[in-house]
Image 1 (spheres, helix red, strand yellow):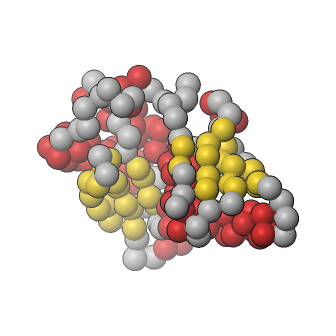
Image 2 (cartoon, one colour; image 1 turned 30 degrees about the horizontal axis):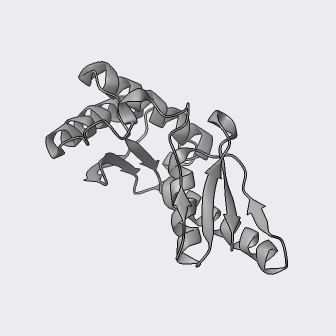
Length: 175
């Protein structure tokens, strides 16, 4: 059985704390619509073609941008670019709704690609533990990425815990 810990940190906005009610389906739909309009406008400005799909799951709105020709989204699908666009999109949503958004943005399969990278990172850390290390620390990452890591670690039968504060918050894996 796995022990997953990821407590509130300074990077967690006040509106995201446990006391806050989860957004309703209609609020998530509204977030998705606002975000889709924002991203569509960005794609138009950049003269890029893309299809936008909106989904809601786990109390978050998810926006996926795909294109028939994946190369057209190549520059936008880089991890740092997706993170920056996600933050800008969240700000656009917050400006219109007055509420903090936990929206997740995926461009050209960037989230699946990052999830695969994180799984490899976890596998290498587990190899170090199986070779005799008592624990293995991963580099700092966002709360969303740490959540993905905790899930992979749990699937592998190990334990993980988030440590550190703010931008230095990272995951430590133990047996």
